Amino acid sequence: MTDTVHKTMGQQSGRRSWAEPWKIKMVEPLTMTRREDRERALTEAGYNTFLLRSDDVYIDLLTDSGTSAMSDRQWAGLMLGDEAYAGSRNFYRLEQAVQSWYGYQYVVPTHQGRGAEHLISQTAIRKGQYVPGNMYFTTTRLHQELAGGIFVDVIVDAAHDPSDLSPFKGDVDLAKLEQLIREQGADNIAYVSLAATVNMAGGQPVSMANVKALHELCRRHGIKLFLDATRLVENAFFIQEREAGYQDKSIAAISREFCSYTDGAWMSAKKDSLVNIGGWLALNDWPLFEEVRNLVVVYEGLHTYGGLAGRDMEAMAIGIEESMQDDHVRSRIGQVRYLAQLLEDWGIPMVMPVGGHAIFLDARRFYPQLAQGEFPAQTLAAELYLDSGIRSMERGVVSAGRDASTGDHHYPKLELTRLTIPRRVYTQAHMDVVAESVKAVFDARAAARGLKMVYEPKYLRFFQARFEPL
Ligand code: P71
Image (cartoon, rainbow, N blue to C red; front, top):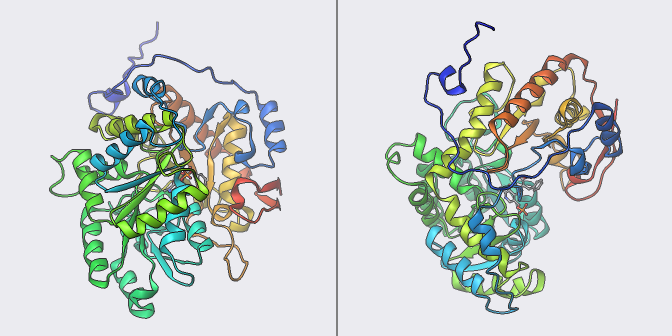
């Protein structure tokens, strides 16, 4: 007998516990790995977590992209796939879902987000035009650059500071945008590229006030505003929580209002929309859409399937509806916050406030002894894997790549390691194991020595680069 009185996590925090609005119907066994196996696997993978086999991973927090669990309704939807080459009924279901939940008029499916980024970049950017955005995303910026565009970061300064507690660190700095318009002229701006939430800033939201003001500014100058809607419902949650006047509005209503201030959107449905593959591009402007609809047949497939099977479009249509439910979003972000709370209490350095889809550990503060060129965030991802078999992702100097004109590394202010939480996949007990591993790696931080890059591919180098310990 011990005299310890155990308490639930809710009781420890002086609140009633909450739980997910679903129960588990099917389970997938995980590989339990041993330290010596992990050492071998990581060496074979060139110290790059993208090159690990998932069989060598215990808890996979590489990404929330395509890794979420579908519902029984979505799985049932797969059986309703109409695998016609043209005019599949599932396309019309998807089109209707995008029209009613996001509010755009014209829709093409794409195989995933970057397929849609390719189409919008190729049709809406003229060579040499500027594309201002609220911080870069890797694939988004690359497609803009491949189309001849010049990306300019116009996010608020607070986004680059991991300890700035502003509630809307995804906002566009309107003064920065106005200055760009003044200097370059509205005609030299292809469109404004707005992401909600901002992945590379730590999943930070954009306020409704900001998108509204941005809409007004763009309208005055005749510039289009396009939205990366990949994690919009998570953004809507933060608006509901933090912005005056939105507490009683639903996630669905907030999302729809947000979209109403934009001229179109691209989507990686592998995130918010709870599918393993899929995306779309939607516009309100018919002439531009006509170009997109023509180009999609070159790169993705006919405009009524865009690289997807009918069943994928059905699962996406159902996923869109599920993703917009308040209880779902609350529990999804609640789980991210549960992990964050433990880490915060233990003094682990990370981006604050915590965003919607992930914890971003601050590798600079983990490893002050490492220069950025010794890849602190890549080192932290490697150490976490060695400690417990948890897979995370580098989001620092490796991800930032090289400057297209000078060939030097981009040295981003943020040097982060992302613990990304798939939706509806892991339990609170998994989160406890993750928290304890991060703590163990933090306690051993003084021993870290850093890495050197020994192989570097030309595009999106972080996927395939190889490293060796220093
Ligand atoms: C994520 C991903 C997937 C990814 C992409 C590149 C490097 C590593 C991992 C993808 C996004 C995203 C946003 C805001 C567009 C895409 C591309 N994110 N916009 O976070 O987060 O979508 O992957 O479906 O092509 O792990 P796609």
